[in-house]
Image 1: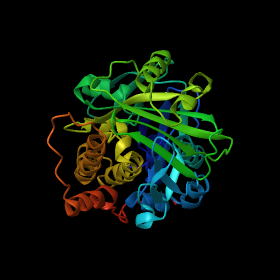
Image 2 (image 1 turned 30 degrees about the vertical axis):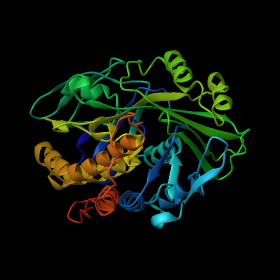
Image 3 (image 1 turned 30 degrees about the horizontal axis):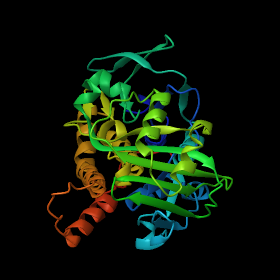
Length: 396
């Protein structure tokens, strides 16, 4: 079936990436985004292993690499700024702690949008208000009042997915808080950050502060984290988030006070819980989920962007290979993706656990099984097959 109409919710990374592949497979794609425009900046995200192959198949390798942060590596430092460890972007073939392809979330979103804008309909400043599905399609009512019918609807609207809540149930059923909170925002580069990320971790409290370079050398990205068993701040209440950050980071040394001094001046403050989305299934009838909406692995996994890009490729490919039959296409997509997702989620949980402060009377942690750990890392980077879908008609 050609010309099938697909609605995608979310225009960050997973949504436009899926739009690219759906269009290539012959679908007519609409992307709806509640924000009035693309959101610039954001934290740096990475593409490793098989995700780099997806970018190459998209024909966007040059564009993505041109927009990368050009981070040379990272230092971990003590409270006085003395270097403890050094990591290079060239480590492990570019798939190490600092990835060869490292790009600001907003810059990658812009590359994907520019690539699809001429072939895909984008509806900014709108959202899905209601939907009703039957055996043949999905009737959608937008907040603007517009009503349309689509054959398929895909939610790529992030950790706090409204479409997931609408179709699958309340967010509390699926979001797993991992006990950590992260904050990011840009600050003036009075810290002389060049091409190297700097990270300070306080082992006594489990808190951290860091600075990473940006393409605009007059600015740097501040990164702050703290442990928290609970998280009950509304993700939309920015002032409450800032109060929480100040309270939790009080007394942390290194450059933290200078970083916090710019908290109210930053135009792009972001704070949220470190969380994963765990679901038994990612589809219901003619509606499916992709990216963080379906299987957030948390920023601590380093693999969220790779999951979004790989998932977009496989979801569009499997749907087209199944003749756009949702039951068969969604089942094949999930079968291919789930082991890859589970490996990345395990990496995320292990990274958070490594930052936890042990109790005073706790037994020493056992030495990790390095062979098993490296096998897990390999599965999280390359552990999924990318069919070429040569039998599926495609636009060039």
